[in-house]
Length: 205
Image (tube, rainbow, N blue to C red; front, side, top):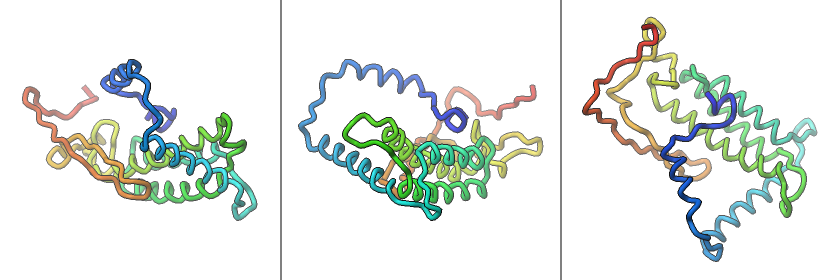
């Protein structure tokens, strides 16, 4: 919910500790093919944003990065929130794609790419948010059960409590990015409990 409502996520301690250790990593050379490729990719994205922002929408208006950011947030809040179902998630997936297409064609990014540009920084970050929103929606569609903060209205008990499907979904999922517009590859790591007994949470007691 923090990601949906507040726009940020809490990292697990394992990841924070890993990143903290990177402070001691020495200088990384920029004289490599990998750096050149990454720099060129970012440059192309920046130029595309600047050029597409010059176009006009059907009603003759351009929209700011904040306009699209708020629109994406509303989609996630309304259709991919704590309580979601296959219908709402399918609708969200379509709306995210449509909004992203409009964003890349009609977003207005003032300034230039040769100097510090906060609006460009926001635009590039929002482009990543579109990818993340699509992945969250796809993962929620894939997991046809209710568990933790993921509540599918089709999977609940008569009392309105979460209804897990341990037979089919007792695993950790990691999605591998395959490039823009391509479906991610799902990797599964089974959860094997040896010292505890699996039980359903009961918030009424």
